Amino acid sequence: MKSIAVIGGGITGVTTAYALSKRGFAVTLFEKHRYAAMETSFANGGQLSASNAEVWTHWSTILKGLKWMLKSDAPLLVNPKPSWHKLSWFVEFIANIPHYRQNTIETARMAVAAREHLFAWAAAEGVDFDLKKEGILHIYRDKKGFEHAGEVSKLLAAGGLPRRAVTPGEMRSIEPTLAGNYYGGYYTESDSTGDIHKFTVGMAEAVQRLGVRCLYGQDVLALHSDDKTASVIVGDGLSDPSPQTYQFDGMVVCAGVSSRTFAAQLGDRVNIYPVKGYSITVNLLDEQSRDAAPTVSLLDDETKLVTSRLGIDRFRVAGTAEFNGYNKDIRADRIRPLIDWVNQCFPAVNTRQVVPWAGLRPMMPNMMPRVGRGRCANVFYNTGHGHLGWTLSAITADMIAGVVTQAYDAHGYVPLQFQSA
Image (cartoon, rainbow, N blue to C red):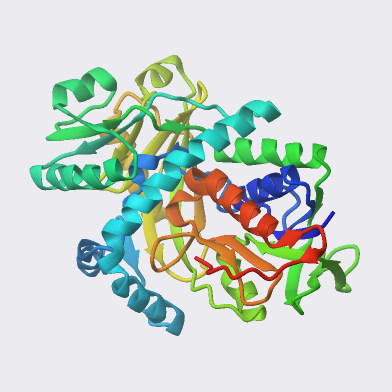
């Protein structure tokens, strides 16, 4: 049985550990926090949204970023302070604009395929995560946004995802609590929502039952490979401050925004940039608020906000994109627009008890996850999922488990010719 280290205990790391364990590997998962899913997998928008597969590598994104650069409450905010990392990322982002169509179709295809695995895993392991299969409704306030959505729908259909245009009247029928005037919408009945934190914690418990060794509270200081042995150097910084080295046959880096640093230690370039997103969880404390909050998930294309109903008494609103380095501060001027949006679209929902949160999405410049082998023969990557980490997690975990499996046979390691993504 070959031993594999998985670096990172978020949604990507935990699902990767699960897929590898089911394929017969001896897996050890390293996570710096005391528990799984304590960073970007803690409080995202809650959508399992193949309908949000459109990649951002489009000239309209650049134009909006320039227009909103000095507007603190803008959906897309870029700190104008330059850095080599940020500049190199945006240069590659622009270089990938010609691949917008191809990458949107491929992302949709992966998102559709991911559902089968994710739902099957949750059912097999008895994981309750407030799953709601009510579809996702995209809402548009003007003709321009609605017509662009029509073009996007063609790309989604090419990736295997049907969705249908709906009139304002049909929108009110789908989600009666939504207030305001709209030009139209698009409804994807096959999409769903749930609580990413509950799902990841449940799957983390499942992998331990399968025999995965989960080492929490272990800060990974460095990674090393000599093509045959993969070394993980950790320190907990508490009871034993001296570094400790673990050795394995191979490793999979699933470390979110830290993947770029670890990849550099291993001789690879994985140009992930941390794109901050914000969310609020509105606690629905009274019956009126519970009745007035939507049950169907929404995506407001103009404000770039998404929603999900988590159980009976929680309403999650998330979105925005902030290019501001590795900064995890929760800014009041970025949270305020989310609360105002709830007050505008769902005025009967009481927002006196709102829990704010911010997380860093690991984004590649081409908006595609990095799934595949590294320069060293026994190093693999499953990272860089951006705003679709949960949506794509199950399929990329299955993909990388397949790649790792192909790299080994009964006699040991076989260095196959494989082009990493």
